[in-house]
Image (cartoon, rainbow, N blue to C red; front, side, top):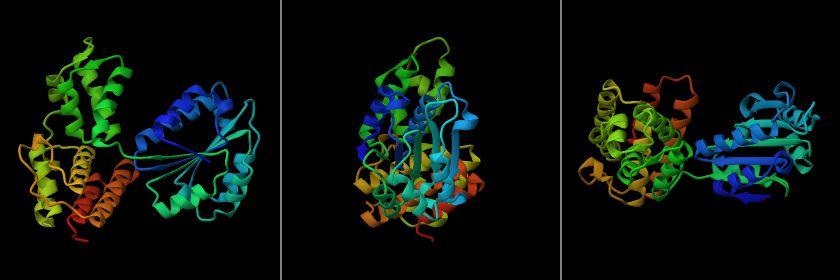
Length: 319
């Protein structure tokens, strides 16, 4: 099994054609944006020119049987060099025996890609221990704060634009490292400036806004201090003012990372945070809640308001 970082994975994927892909990939971790991008590259290259209806199968662990997944991965491709089998929520697959048997001798005619994003370390270890030597394993970590400006610059350059340093700093600080959200907000900026190819700080401020920053920091402080009623009240005010739940989640996640590290909250708040530094145990619990809220906002039928209310109550220690 080869362990790659997300950066070396993209180097591997870009330099390899489908013939050079590993027979098995396992993606885990917290940053779904990069995992989705990697999956898109694998899909596009593996199925280039091939009929997808006959060569692509997508399974979800909670709704699938391992025997069925293994059978499809063992099926020969039709009018193509490779077939692609994707198993999402692999950590929720109930019976792993047939899957383990397949992984002992994976088909060379299939690119079998498993995703277990947000899986706990125990389930991640169970899956990674099943991988053959020919497999590739990547844990997608959340970007560190110091990595965010470089990510913003790369997103901007890949779209044919350039950007002021002040605009990068404002963008990075305001959206606190949610890469998918940053890409979506950058697209709004691109549309705003039209034919111009250079992004200024005022462009970002006009498009993204100050995003209710003082109230969001008030929300973080109240939740970290265990004041559930004030935290929920502040959340309701932000939602009434039209703030988007995903943006709120991005700010909260960034604030909790800073509190876990004992750092001050961003200068955009206009003050130091009144929230105490949280312990390692509190940080682990909080990040679990934040990750669950992120998944629920992106794929659950639960109304976003209820997802955020539950998150704020959990962060406040109400339950």
